[in-house]
Length: 406
Image: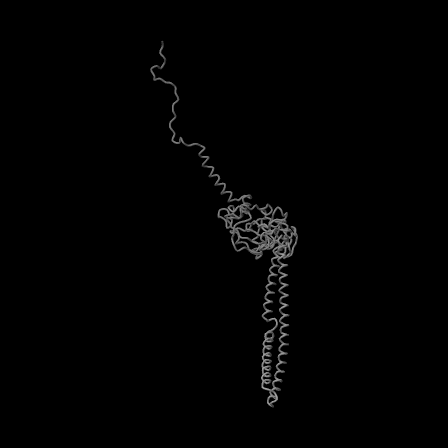
């Protein structure tokens, strides 16, 4: 058998040779992409802030933020406030925006049951929602009226008895004074007669005509008559020493009458516990009770002076420094259908918790606001009279005073 060629050479199996080792074997192209993405994003943000496209400019105008250098107003708008589109288009960086609620002048007055009404229930409601009432008008009656009226009748009867007692006492004292005067006149006449008889007896006795016994009897009658005069004078002095109204018996009767009148006055005041009266002049806004029901804790009804409407605006404490009385205010809400206008009337003196965003206290724990009262103009007040407690968005033009000064 012929030998294969090159049999004298080493065996060659044509196997692939291993590539030479590389120094950067861990590197992958995807890693480069991961590194370049943050660089591109940062560069785009810087370029966008520098050139500020229209969309970004509107964002800064809306929030009041300043790119690159922070902001004088770090919280331009509370995150819960949704500014209407028509207001956002004209919003200036100097404007202060806050949530507001429409209220009557002096806020809503809660009409509660009278003090001391106890367990009395509502007997009848005399008004309806929307009625205009004067201050002191009777709005409702309670079912304790009959018992209180009975107490008034009893007090009136007691007063009448005390009045009659006083008249009787006065008449009795006047009659006693007249009797004392008559008794004194009679005693004086008897004393004069006894004195005359004594003189005559003494004259007769000096001539020996009258006996000594007759003389002693005449002297005794004269002494008794003089004592009767003194007694009658003392009795009369009891009634004539002071005026009739200052007599002790009259004073006692007058004091009893005064006490009865005071009791009557209290009974009549208690009768007011059966009536619910209007604390102010205004409009009935809501009624919370029905006949037969006990007056609820939130009051029987609510009312307010809707002839002049106002708005209570909550302004964040970071923006309150720019607000001043007299600045124009614009309020808007979907329910109104138009904007309301007014001016800042007063600024609160305390910083409180935000109350117009949410009923959850934890949600508003960090929202510190100052309440600003805005007086609406007559046209806006007439429209807002039907929307008490309506939530609106208020914009205060804090730059108006600066422009007016220029």
